[in-house]
Length: 153
Image (tube, rainbow, N blue to C red; front, side, top):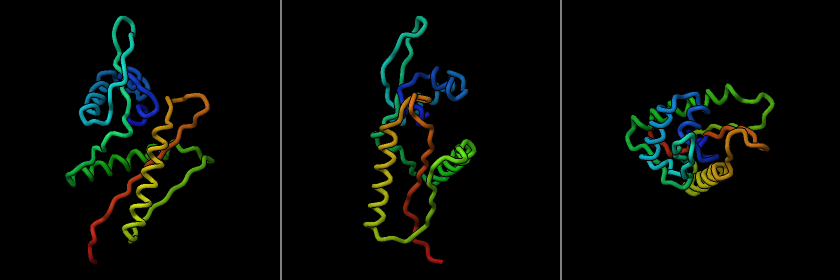
């Protein structure tokens, strides 16, 4: 949902159609995202005698970082599953880049790399468009960067 709401403001009905969900399920998740501060209202429109509220992902909202270890692990599991799902849709000859590392680096090098990746992801979010917009291509970008405990062997 957040990916779709990055590219354009959408209603629960539009999200439901795009994701193959019921409108009630999409609406429930939207309300949860609004309460978490990740999604903001983005206007309304008249639809068949009613009013459809539209929502958009706020790329500049403070991150809803998990604070307890169980939530962090659950997030990592969901992220891994989503990466597998997206990998199955990967275009065989499509360009991309993949990297993995567990390293020891100077604090300045870490902060510089973390900031560069954060800036690149923000840029992608700001330039996202509605699904299947003319002149666009569907891409996947997944990043997880974090400091590790200094455990001795």
